[in-house]
Image (cartoon, rainbow, N blue to C red; front, side, top):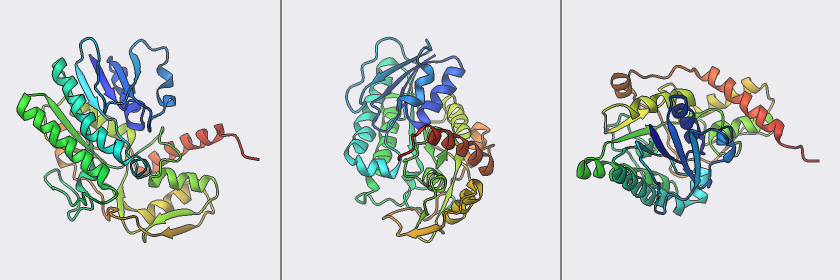
Length: 316
């Protein structure tokens, strides 16, 4: 099997590369490294089953030879990134998805879209099932990411209905683990970085807003099962264990044994108050549910961040 994986040098994309290659696939990683990192795929430098193409998928994608699967994971995914790169974020969701779908159609390949729980916006329903249409501010600062992904889903379903393309869509909820960037801007890397450097741990809002954190190996297993299913509609993959951001910050404080205080800053515009997946569909359809508990996942992630920080030379 040969897969083209856009965004393959990113956090999730690189872990999916690992899963595919472990299962005997050949992988062509297509990434412009806007938010991805060559370090995430450096271990494949001499692997005959892996090839890297540095390319912006918002432009036409030309791949010679047969392809069995096109997996579209290219996109900024952190608010820090998509607020800094609003137009590229919209373009990779619209033009990038169109180009990736066109490649799949031309090669008679299957297509897989990495979508997001951000499609639900600031939800009025919790936990969020796939049948919920969401509560999104299309012109707010987060709209560049939310609407790009919603458009990508619509385009994917149009190709499925009009062209008969075999398509699959995953809605990914908050995921964490090794290869997240220290400056990613999301809660977990922020909290751990601040704790390890003795800075105050910054919680936005009053900390009562919730998230549910899925360890990366669980997410990738769910994605791999969905890839091989016959389901075409969006499917939530995430951990339904809901936790407040304040409680999460306290967990990090205990884990890192830091004396860093927790401070509170204003909540960014349109930041979701609750985020929790209904995974009933994934359980029934894929026989999938998360296995890694939050404490175990945090320990594994902390060990990774400690190694990364040890590589950074101290500033005199």
